[in-house]
Picture 1: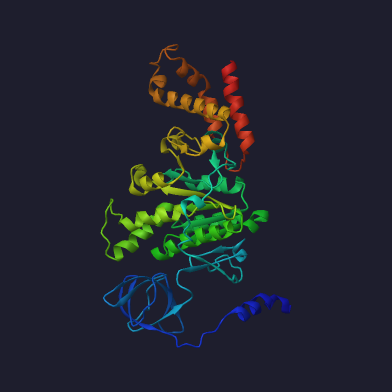
Picture 2 (picture 1 turned 45 degrees about the horizontal axis):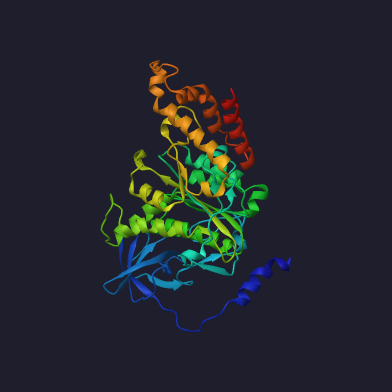
Amino acid sequence: MLKLFDPILSELGADTFSLTPRRYGLVAACDGGLLEVSGLSVPVGSLCRVSHGHNTSLSAEVIGFRNGRTLMMLLGDSVLLRPGAFVRPEGRPGMLPCGEGFLGRAVDGEALPIDGGGPIHVRSEWPSGGIRTGALDRSPVGESFDTGVRAFNALTTFGIGQRIGIIAGSGVGKSVLLDMIARGAEADIVVVGLIGERAREVSDFVSRHMQGDKRERTVVVAVPADHAPNLRLRGAMLATSLAEHFRAQGKRVLLIMDSLTRVAHAAREIGLLLGEPSAARGYPPSALATITKLVERAGNSAESGGSITGLYTVLADGDNQDDPVVDTARSILDGHIVLSRELAQRGQYPAIDIAASLSRVMNAITKPEHQALARQFRALIASYEANRDLVLMGAYRAGADPQLDQAIAVHQALVGFMCQGEDEIVPLHDSIAQLAGLLGANGSS
């Protein structure tokens, strides 16, 4: 029985105690979730504890300075907060807890468990902004990544250490597609960041994926949409820091972030609170820069041999593919998958618009025969979609275009190849073999 307390006792024994006086400040102003604190000078990124009576306290994060006062943003609700409340710094600024203790657990943006389990005891820490490395310290992508999704494996093959975006409007199937990849992907560690999404989705995801053997290699960081913007941003940084920590140990990590757009929205709220001018359709420059910094932290490590394969969902507001967040993500990612609302309305799931989707590393990690088959598939799909209205109206005369004749003949087979059930897993080799069988049979007929 006493052995249960060994981790806690060893942690207490390793702590260092400081006898210096504890500093504190006072709440001078509160505007929504933005606090102005006087008498306390601490670095940006520091966490502080705000005492507001009744033996209760709130957490706040330092986000800037103005006129000799420290600007903080609450990580919770400002109800019952009063002027003159004591504010004390806690923890190490700019550092987030990391370690094996997070495996099999679901936590919030403050790294506190939300799964009903006991407290998480870890000694390791990682910088919230990551450890900057030189461009040549990142080894190139040279090995295929098996997603378990036939269309991805065969037509937009991903690589280990690649950063991919899933771009779609609301309700087109991004979250379902993430579920399929999280279930079928081959990785040592899976870190999932559910940032700014519905609380119901968080509960459903944890109940589906934190079971059996998968639980011991999965970490879920969940910050629903009703939480403070800096807590959502902190959750994204925690998920990325955990992935970097495991990559430094030589592990192959799959980092799933749902969604990158909600992270940008959180950064936008913070930037506007600080008075930063909006530049691109309401987004201040710091919000778009946050996306770039977050995505660039994924990739392969030449030093440890580990990798982070990043999978990020991007919400196209109003199905606008020219949205600033979509455009920024598409420019910095190594590939993007576009989901089409029109295909979803036809009943095709996953609703992948294969003509608009791209993997920038596919040619470097696949054989020429595989690339030729993928190009042939794309050409047939594009030819049919470009002439779909003519074919449905009966205005097309057979024999006018041999490629279109072939596309019409095999269209149902092509659509069937793109479709896949939620619980179905198709390995990489099987996906390529099925693609070769489909187009080979068509070529011989």
